[in-house]
Length: 219
Ligand code: AMP
Image (tube, rainbow, N blue to C red):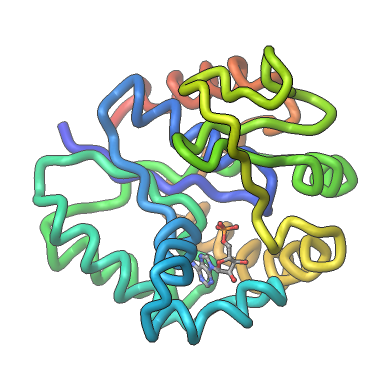
């Protein structure tokens, strides 16, 4: 059975972490518009050049751009792959676009999983996070240092990176954007009976278990 699920929650809620686990454990594919945009910025494509300033400010890139990216990525994947939308949709217009994108490809939304977190904890989570520049494994200054200082546990690389938008000022803007534009799409999905809430403050393994239970519950 092909699943289409959305992980919804403010920046730092753990969407990317959980999506990575679902990829590993179920062969699902994570579709993160943030990752796609960061790749475009790194490659210096016209899209990346346009998006960079908006991302650095913590504001939202246009609905057309991100929905276009999602459509392209789904087409490249083919029909029989289960997907996790991470960081998309972020506005009501994107939620509408996603319905159309899925319907045009014979897909439908199965679950919207909201990761609930306390905002104060998010600033701490986000401003301390960094990742391996080679394999992407995630770390944290205060909560998850590599076992050997300066060496990635997963691949042994000694190069790490931080997101330029993971500073306190930008994080506050990203949260305000979430409250103003993204949180209002939850009631729309709730009316359709798609939403399940998960405590995003719980340990990573517990959040993962809660998501597994939701996925096992029905299609
Ligand atoms: P993320 O990695 O999901 O935190 O996204 C990083 C940044 O990319 C956001 O702060 C936005 O500037 C941009 N972005 C990612 N996904 C979207 C989206 N669905 N709609 C608009 N902007 C997005």
